Length: 334
Length: 163
Ligand code: FES
Ligand code: FES
Image (cartoon, rainbow over all chains, first blue to last red):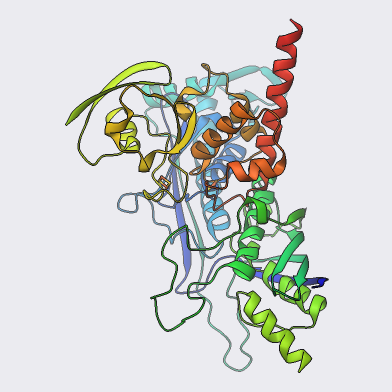
């Protein structure tokens, strides 16, 4: 038995959003009497952190603390329309819609505060801690709670805003095939190291080293988490997951639950390191691109290349099972 | 039907156990403790993990009628007011959670490990959480957080000994 080491890399360019009949998302925002800003969305946070990121976008645009932002998501019957959480589009589309809505709400907020402070709205700024104040005269200030109370009970105004981001449908130029199907592309490269046991055919992924160009990491901890959680999924696709390992035509032997559907556990994870690079996209919210789906992509060809480097077996069908590696080794020896 | 009396997070509780119900359903639907999650309801994901007389169990497989007189610990009982347990704080600081669905079960499995083994190796942590499925984090931040929590607990115990 020999343990053969190999190293491979793969790169991926990944589009943000999609191009089927246009790709819009809307956001509405309104202030409560207590100085909170409610963002209404029908977008779904299924765990990827959308609520956190849109709250950041709103807080930054309003100039208010995150604690003042309340995100209300996911009632597609009553919420403003969203195409959905897919195509790595959430941060880009919904973030942009929220920024647009928050800008409109901020303008009203400043107009209400201007009336209370007997100043010109253009001369006002936010201090990030909950106050609107006069530029150059920070003692002249009013707390957001007093602004919203004044709006409701004295001035009779709603502090609110509407936002939408629409990527219009784009058709290919018939002569050239040229088109503009996405809004921007994120880029990544992963280097994988594997060890192949030439007796059992088992390929063990030892490490993944990732570099991701994400436009702007709105939340660096969540961006790194997405890269490495997705990297783990990529390892899983590459060497573990198979819906029908032996009998593709029949479900008789297919896994049906968590016990049988094999994915790497904590003892089977590779070492990972990740570098996040930022080259802001001109149309992204604060420059951000989408990196949801792509994180599971680059590891797979990188692992295939590492297996080839380790033992000379070129595999093109996932998962890279011990059986397929042994058959490949047999073919090389024949 | 049977009235089950038990202690949950240190407080006396009672509920009527309907035939065929599980500890998980009793906790969630009768006692209002929704921290333990129902991921698979067949013992395979660990998201429903609670401590039964100090031992981690998948509460979806524990018949409710069997816990009469038992001591149950759930995620709701870990924090002392606003002060999180060492494991909870280490998960927070180490960003060992993404969607959060596995987190209550992971933390209860980790608490049980550290109760019986204050200085676990990485392999022992892997073993202790091997019945808890996470589909977001890739496990690394979770394993690191448990090791970090162990160190925090030991330094706290060391301080206690000095005082
Ligand atoms: S819900 Fe109990 S193990 Fe999955
Ligand atoms: S954090 Fe989502 S399943 Fe673990």
